[in-house]
Amino acid sequence: DYVLRVYGYVVMPDHVHVLCAVAPGWTLGQIVGGWKSVSARRMGRGAVWQREYWDRYIRDERHLEVVVDYIHHNPVRAGLVKEPSEWRWSSAWRG
Image 1 (cartoon, rainbow, N blue to C red):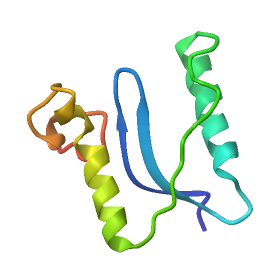
Image 2: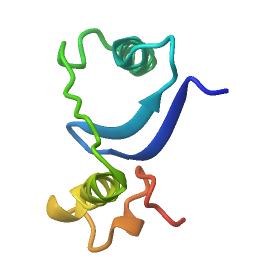
Image 3: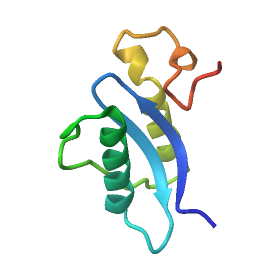
C-alpha cells in the first residue's frame, strides 16, 4: 500500500516539480497542501508557496518518460549544472 508513488522530482531555487501517483482515497490537493504546510513551517516562514498547483494527466509510458526527463533536465536548462545527475535536489542525482 502507498499514499504516494514518486516517479521523479526536482527542487529548484524558485519552484518544485514532482511527478507522482496518488493512492485511491487521497487527493493531490491533500498531498500538495501537506508539503506546502510542513515545508513553510520548517523554513520558519509564512506564505512561501503560491496558492495553486499545476497538474497534468500522464497518457502512457512514453509520456511518463518524457515528463521525467523534462523534470530532471530543469537544472540543466536553468544553467545550474551540466548534467541532471549533478543536481543534488533531484531524483536524478547520483551522489
